[in-house]
Image 1 (cartoon, one colour):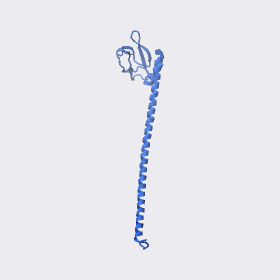
Image 2 (tube, one colour):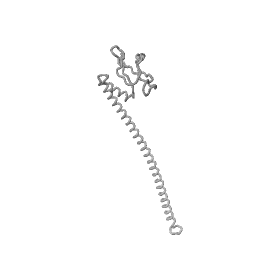
Image 3 (tube, one colour):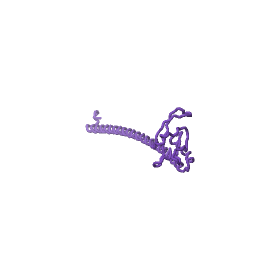
Image 4 (cartoon, helix red, strand yellow):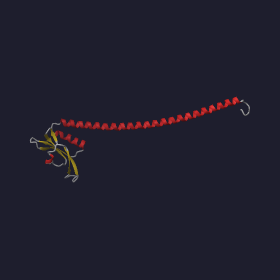
Length: 177
C-alpha cells in the first residue's frame, strides 16, 4: 500500500510492526509447540521406562512370593514329619514316617538305624535298601562323616555311591548310628 501511495509512512510502519509481531508470535508458538511435543515425548519415554521397571519389580515379587511359598510348604512338611516322629511310641511306628522323610527331604534310597542295646552294642533296628555293614572303626567316631562304597548288587551294581554316617549321642553316651 505504501508503494501505491495509499498510505503514509506511519501506516506502513504500523503494518510492518504488526506483521513482525505476527511472525514473532507465530515463531514463538511454533517453538513452544515443538518444545511441548519434545517434553511429551520425553515424559512418555520416562513413563514407559518406569512401567518396565514396575513390571520387573512385580515379576521379582511374584518369584520371591513363589519361593517363599515353597519354603513355607517345605517347612510345613518338615513340621508334620517331626510331629509324626515325636508321636511315635516305638521304632516300628516311626519307621514309615522316617522312611518318607528321608526319601522326600534327602532323596535317600537306602538307610539303616542302629541303636545300642543293654550291653551298649549297636544292633540293627531298621534298615532299607542296599548299604554296607558298619565297620569297627566307624563306631568310635563322634562326628557325622561321608563314606564311599561300591554297590554290590542290583541295577546300579558296580557303581560307587556315598553314605552319610550320623552317630547318635546323648551327652557322652552313644545311643545309635
